[in-house]
Image 1 (cartoon, protein in one colour):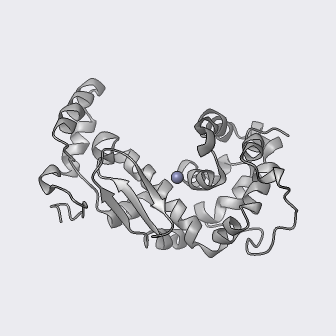
Image 2 (cartoon, rainbow, N blue to C red):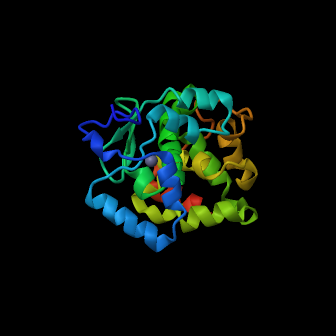
Length: 238
Ligand SMILES: [Zn+2]
């Protein structure tokens, strides 16, 4: 265990050699000075502060409904020795997040990264949304299709989906979209109504308007479930 109480795989614990306050002070430096500091830290493979996984889950899920927080906080977050990277591993039902995210990307970014990974865990472990995933996201795809004509009324969502999300190529798929919506939209009023209805239980605790465990009442053709179709619908097209 490191002084911060973090298990770092094969870590040389001397590399975690600061605290949260030191990192907060560093982040207030002018950008060029911070970049230089990070360059020197990386020369030493130093992690200034690594948030323990359970504390990180609590921080990342602040403001979400109590049932969502309770579920997400059950997820183990392993901090491994690397500057960046991470993921959710369904086979182990665990999240891994690089120990360097705080030091090299920032204390704000680590919470956003953890939030994204925790919503992969929540999709996999909340019986309602897991049921939709098991029918190939039939309800989620339908909500995206229904949102097409309403994008103009939700400029922040439209700018995010077209300017950021869809730029990721193959990564712009239903699984990643699911994790990104609660991470990027804490105010459901910024979401088109069909998207809002699907995600609101996770964001503001509203009830779902449909039962995701029932077979979707509309047939999805093979073409409807192609990635290109999902991306076209996200962009508001046909
Ligand atoms: Zn992801």
